[in-house]
Amino acid sequence: GNKRKINNDRLKEKGNEVIHVRAKRGQATDSHSLAERVRREKINEKMRYLQELVPGCYKSMGMAVMLDVIIDYVQSLQQQIEFLSMKLSAASMYFDLSSTEMDATEIMQRSASTHEIQEMDGIGGEGYGGICYFNPTWPLY
Image (tube, rainbow, N blue to C red; front, side, top):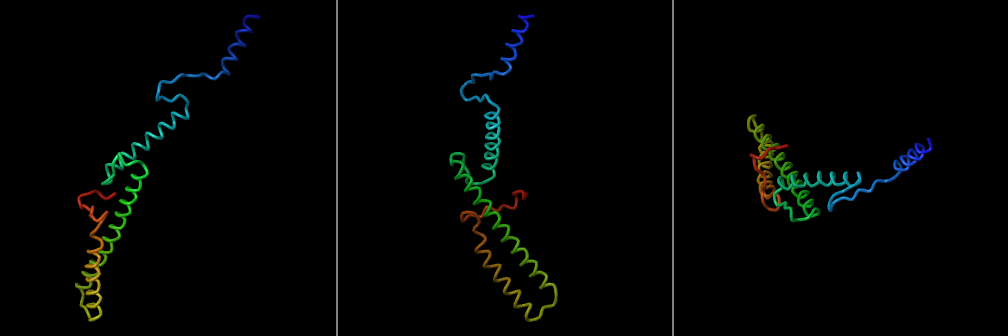
């Protein structure tokens, strides 16, 4: 009975011990480090995907510069969308006006909107970094 009690005490002590595992270089051992590695891998995977989507975005840039390029590109896309929607609404107003009978005020409005469209063509055609990246074959998400 006494020998059994000593073995039980030893088992209890082993249950309270922290197991130290020697990891190979570059390998994590604790759950926090493993979770952190998984998180970093997910971030890197998403950054690689963004590199494929954004022109002028390269792996050698570094994270902060790469994010700046991505932000600039998304903002340029937003500006192009705003410009194209203004152009579309101006064009639809033009065609609506030309399909009905026009009086003198409508003719003046139409010529003013045509002039605005020509000005917007000069401004909005520049695109991202002076180059228009809009391509009608690209998918719109």
